[in-house]
Image (cartoon, rainbow, N blue to C red; front, side, top):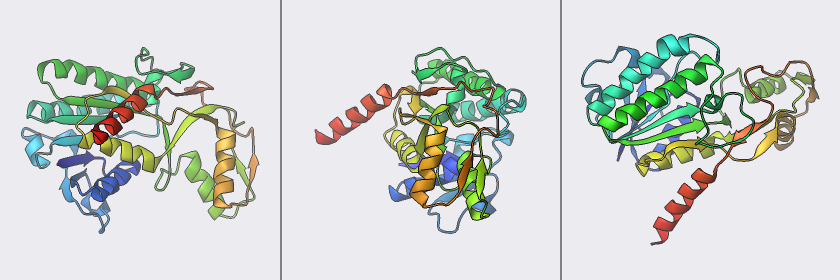
Length: 285
């Protein structure tokens, strides 16, 4: 099976490509800069700016059976109007061309920010109430693709990603900032009060799940990509320090809590668990 990955050199994309290689899948890395592709990657490289695509887009990326779409610009500024004014029309134009030209399976990275300021365990059938331009644009893209699907049927999974951590994370994330503070030999790490509850998943687990969904050509609609286990930021950071044997003190209360996030939310993973159980059942038949 042939799978194309957009945003292949990003944090998530690089782990997804590595996982596809482990599964011996025929992989196409769609990137803007081929120079960023590691030499050890066993994949076909397609250099493309998705904002400049024309007709025969599917053929230009190697006519894959499935696309894992991870590309999205303008981050980590969640409040930038770029998400609505630039990213949304660009993303839809690119993906709709793939579908109209015959793409069979499309898996797109959504975001928990589509839920907005809702508290507690968040289920896929909850109404989307985005409170940032980023969350709005992502959800609007999902709605557009669902309308498109009525005219051009294709397997569609919208993976609402919660919080991921691991090797290669952007420097703005708390995991990367903590690692950098340790590397610099700092005695203290400044952070918020740390009482907010979040849903964190190791990037390796998320990459494995996304690859599973693509290779099985899953048609799941909206799907929370999450652990389902709420954890306070304080206890999470303390665990990272303990697991890595780092020596650094935490300085709580230095930063305010983000205004665009509720204090406590995590993903309901019943749908994901049911999907996994169904797959395991198929393996035993």
